[in-house]
Length: 85
Image 1 (cartoon, rainbow, N blue to C red):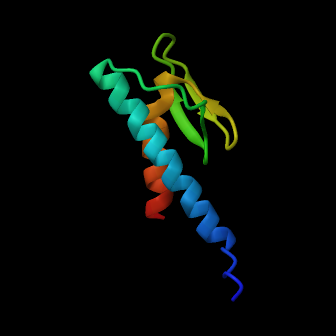
Image 2: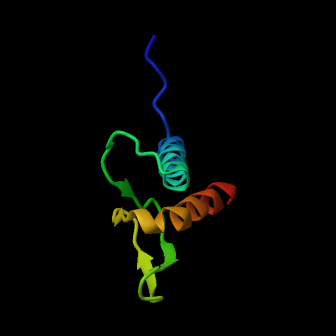
């Protein structure tokens, strides 16, 4: 029996879930001062609006762009909003 092919929507949902897990872990590590083994950069799955903590400048990350640690909370919120629809 041939396995059923996943739809683009299913694949996208899995990518969002993985981004949320990675972002949540990074956020928890930042809050607790713990560091996790490097897993590579967190990549924006959707447009993310954040404010740079040092300059106060609004920053927009586009899908596919690496997200710096200071923007992880904004990335988590954007991923949650995207999943909520």
